[in-house]
Length: 121
Image (cartoon, rainbow, N blue to C red; front, side, top):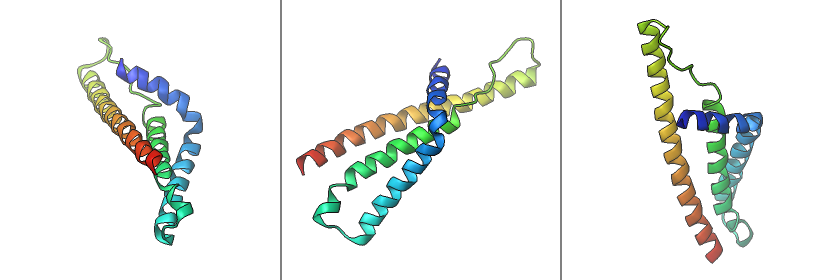
């Protein structure tokens, strides 16, 4: 059930997979440039939104890359070792799904805190 939902989400995000990666790299590069070049009043306001943008675009790229193609479901007509292999593969994807959901929840909480801090500046 969870894997199917992540698969559907990945299929929606997959056509823009390269765009998500470019967005993540460019936002991280902009963030690094601001940090290296030194703070000033104009660039300081961009730090927190760039950090949130880089996190969300990385998450979108990860899901678009990982869950596009899932292993097939287990069938009783298959041999024992084939069923075992498919169950282990699906278990691995299930654990990745749990990890991704945890990362998404953490990123959401982090983004909400960043928005609070950014709003108070």
